Image 1 (tube, rainbow, N blue to C red):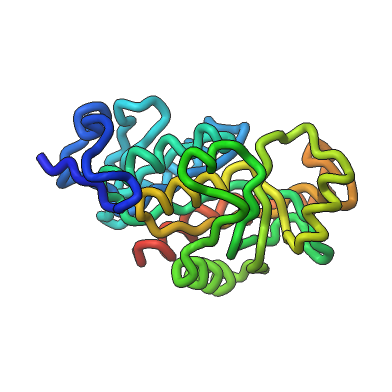
Image 2: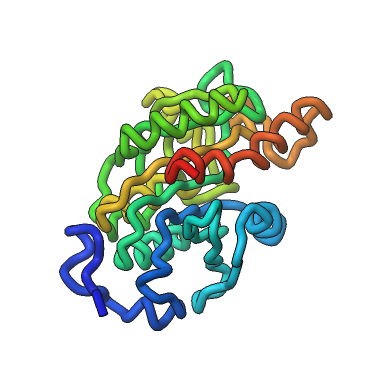
Length: 254
C-alpha cells in the first residue's frame, strides 16, 4: 500500500492508515476535496450531494465520497477553522491534489452586496489552527486555480471580486476596533475557515482556493441574522446554490 502523502510538508509517511480508517481504496482517491463552512450542515449536504453520484459516507462521519461526471470528489461541511483542517490533513496525505473552500463571508470593503462572490488571493490568519500547519501572518491561494475559479464564476453570470480577505475564529465577537484593523489592512471580507484550509493545504502540498458568497455587511453593522429584502435574499441564495458546481468545474474541469 502506498502510504506516502502528496506533499513534502506532510512528511514521508501518513500519520494514520487513512485508507483503512475511511474505507477507501487508492483507486478511489478523490481528485478534489470541497470543504464548506456552514451552521446549516444538513441543508448544505442535501444540496451538494444531490449533484454527485454513487454517494456514500466515509468512515469519518459527515465526510462524503461521490462522483461528478465520473470524477471522484469528497465533500465535507465542517464549520470553523479547527474542524476544516481535519479533512484537508487527511486527504492531503492520501494524495488528493486540490481543495476548494466554500462558505459565506461578511463584507468589509465598500461595494460588496449579498450574493456577490469573493475569491480570496491572500488571507490574513486570525485563527489558531493555521499555526499548527506552519501558517503565520497570512497565506496565499494557489494563483492559477483562483484565477480559473473567478473566471468560471464570472462566466456563469456572477459578480466576482478577487483580493485579500481575513479569517477569524469567533463569529459573535468582532468588535469595531478589530473590524477597523481588517479594513485598514485592505481585506475585502471575513470568514471563519479559509486561512486554516489554505495553511493545511500548503503543509500537505495541495492546490487551494476559495469561493465565498457575501451575506452580512460587517463594516456597516448589518448582521446575517437580519432579514434581507426578497430580491437580495434570492440573489444570495442563488450564489450559495451555485458555489459547489462552480468549484468542481473550475477545479477538475468536469
